[in-house]
Length: 418
Image (cartoon, rainbow, N blue to C red; front, side, top):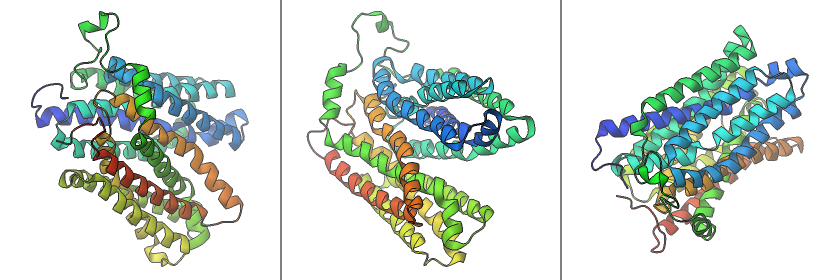
């Protein structure tokens, strides 16, 4: 449903911009603590296992919280949940900046994980309800793009400020940035409002009022939907593949292709740039075809093929960077169609719940991927992460095909595509 009949392009893009800023903030925050591993380890005498545990806890809390926040979004509306998540980031960053020991760092990670859990359910609830269907492809493209930009800017900002003014100032700087985004979300509150929710409605005072089906009914519906569990597994696989690229491309470029760390870092940046270009192109593909699963399938199979070639070591050194950028392009190309695919199997009154469940697969993949591929490398399988990424992409492609078939079935209580 739309919050008002016939919203203008300007209204749509204001909503897309505000939601995108929140999504950029969430991805930015995910890399704040990892960007401070070295100064935190020096300040408190921590080893990398202790530092890594902070992020494991962050993503475990985020994954569990994402499922819960999805139901809350459907109960009270996405806008206040989005505000809460951003405000929680401010608190987490302040805790980080004032930390006097490992316990406070862990508390900052827990609070940050709680904040991180709200964004996908709240973001997609707002976009699906407020943005005109013929602009949804561009909305999903922009959503993915802003998240990627958040990842790209976080280490640059945090490391630079920490080197210049110290890690505590860097943490407080992050708090200030999150506060600025929160103020923007409050300023643009009318563009985030979803009609039919308790948020800002006089119906909120009515006992027993509900904007959707009961919690038990929603749980039973989700647990009984193979398409939605397939979507959850899709995100687990896709994120496992991305974790292989993000965490192990630099050492693998050195091991297999003899690249320096600086050159390998440039190759990784090329992958991210390719992803951004793919996301932009993918926004147009969503509107060009109703069969989103075909776009996802073909894109991920192509990305998997590139990673197999890279893992084989057959790619000429001069073309290795281009191959990595091409893999990033194919991966990014699938993202808007992937989000549209989930929309097609989403019951209209359970948007937050569905996206909370499905996108919690991102957190599961983020937690599993580094461990799995680290074990492969320790076992001497030097190309293991890239081959693992290829396998994960192929499984994700097959799952996308299954989800697409389910989305065309007559029994799915889903959104209409137009």
